[in-house]
Length: 340
Image (cartoon, rainbow, N blue to C red; front, side):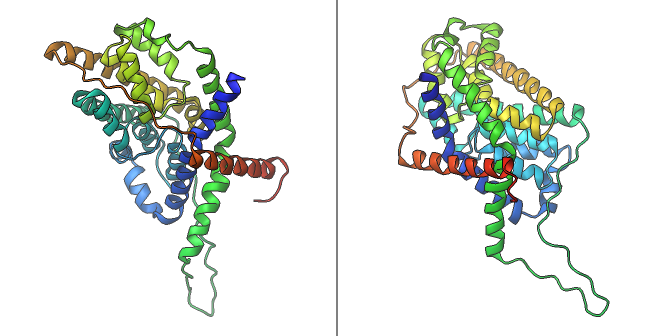
């Protein structure tokens, strides 16, 4: 019964962010010129650009999935997509604010820097060691018909038609492509939430081993950057180091199973392995460096108690109903062979 409740809570928490993310992805897919995306995020050195574009966006680990898929299918490289997938959920203007409120200025500064560093490392490694990059082509309009008697006339696509197409893409094809992996990820996240003891992480407070234990537990968790902050405060109050708390805030939002399954499906198995290695190595390195700086300069944490906002309100529940309805509708299309 507890597992079912945890699954429902995770689904409800993620629903509004997923709906917003799919809408943003649809808008990007239809309204942002493909040539701009290809020129900005299609080259190897664009991993830095993708990291800085994603860092301030207030998108959680769930809503970033459809947005990243949208830019990937609009021409972004695998490396840029991986970089965007790391920096966006690990930090954002909202999480930076709550980090300052609950942890003080040092952690507020350290968090986005470490997130951008992790994103650049992940994107660079995917660019160097990933498989051949072949992004999916986007079709935006019917081909122009040629005539020997008339000049070629391009019919401009009306704004209303583009908006409609954005909804069809975001809540149709895109949702069909990742919804099963998302549900599998939520399932395993609920397993971790239900069966891993709450005080497990606090048993190992110091050093590399503590950070690796935190990585092992936080990878399958579903948690957004904002929600991870008060949890990190609780862990700090229980005895872990600031560096270990930073590792938790980096790996938790960027490596939940829902995201990993989509990466495997969208970018490939090799890229998934590279993505995981890059995040773990960069997060632990950032955590060790932060602990060293705390010890060197004798910094002190400025902790405050705080709780993540209540996610069981009407907006979240209504969003969950809408998302569940869309998933059921798309499952019918997929398994009953109803033409989209």
